[in-house]
Length: 464
Image 1: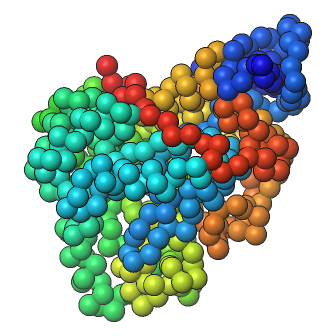
Image 2 (image 1 turned 90 degrees about the vertical axis):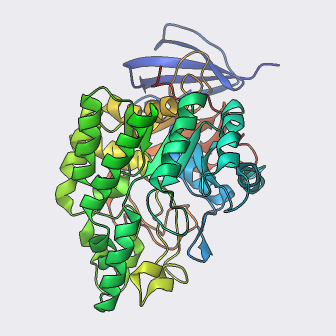
């Protein structure tokens, strides 16, 4: 028996259009749209979306569930993190599997499959972090692309942990140019940053605010410029993650003005927070330690402009939560020991809707940077990121008039603070369908661990 759901009377918003329409779902797929009231579809479940937006489920292309960092683990599991994502209107995440140093990509991928299997409330995929670039791991990249792991992250930061030198980065880019994969770069000059960290600590500068001061904007820009040139030499597309600095945006914009296949993401923390947060009194600034770091508020205008002009294509969260008590406190006397990461997977769609109301972006651009573009970038569009016949029935009923105050007291992420504590926003998720199944039902969790399916991905749909 085919199960049918009709979503009636809402304003359907995609990256391409806004239309008052009814949406017909059969089992896990969207099968038809029709102007409101023109079709008398019958269904077992009818959802009244009058006065609400009907939008695609969000695609968060940058999360770190259960990630090891600095002697501890990110506090959200795949179960708690994907449940929180659903509360925030996100129905697909792409997390990062990590190659253990000295071991194979396959071993790392298997570890992450074991963490996520039968635990996720929403669908998920994986990128692969290359910790050890050598002949064996380069060959493995081809096999992973063929089975739907089509993006590979490397770092110019974190010497001794994830750092790759320019030759290793070039080799990985050459491999991706051949196999259709997409190299993702964390672009900061980690070698120079380590010098500045040591010098700051020697001066007795141990507070959280110095995390932002040593990770200079110019060192993000320098590394961004360098990886763009390496990608040009390799003839490969490039995706730069968590862009935070105006100077780094300028490097991406210049490359794109030359017609290069260079892409970038930013994150809500860089759009809404700043070094003012890192400088909060006492040790409170530790809550806001992430890399790339928060920048002075003056950088935000360049990020918003780049989102409007499509020089940045995606807003992801880089969700990597560590509790203040017992985790962030590991660096109480040394900012370099504060675990790097912020919680945010639950807040992204609401914060970006507030950006619509504040005049930074349009409604369709909201959906483009949070749903459609991340799906296109990572080979999921058509299945994810839109409301159209044939797409998965990942559908969010969104109340654009509901008001809320973001707080750790009410969020669902497994972390003891909110990076946006006390921020008032207008707009709230009301109901969420994942492949046609209710996950959030009028503000109540209706999902289950194990509903979420591993989703193999195609290659980047931006690159011909």
